[in-house]
Image (cartoon, rainbow, N blue to C red; front, side):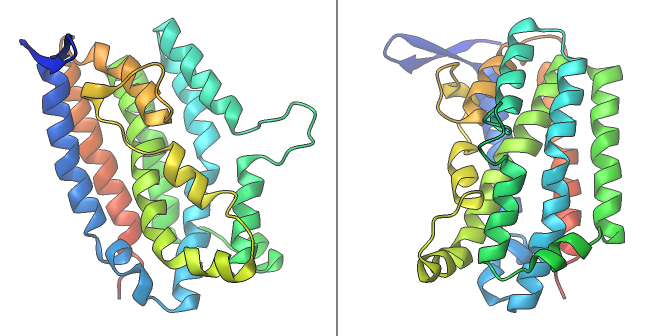
Length: 249
């Protein structure tokens, strides 16, 4: 496959352009899901229940990144994934809350009680999605290689998250403003998980998706790399859509 001039003397590889176009179509489908597009029309109770169920997917984030580290062969990619994982626990002294604690903090602002958070349990659908998420990573680790593993981490753990939290924020923003506090979890993750096209990905990117993309894009040229990317992203999207289906009446 050939390269195209990306401007300023850079070359953009054809597989990255194809991957970006494929991903853009998936994200358009995702944003159009009734539970996300209609988030402002949900009752307070329904919205809060969706956030409580979504928390269980967030709790899976460190597990998926640790599994990814175990599976990756590329040392540069391993170091990058380690860095991102360590950002989830930003202070070795224990003085700074983890991102999971920040999530609970935001839920309290949004109307959940600590008792409600602690007593919530995954629904049957959520539990099934969690099980399939782990299975996707297992299959990628054993059968598909680094391109599939990085695709999962970037798309499942960063790109889709930014889209979700951006949709949530349309409803959340007013609540945080009224409380006079700053979101510690949803709004920051909407920004630092944001999608950067693979054709523009760089190790110096300010977003996680851009940094992961810089490792992934090198693998798209390899044998079966683009095919693995498309297969994995399609399956991850179908799984996340199924999670949100449970909130549509």
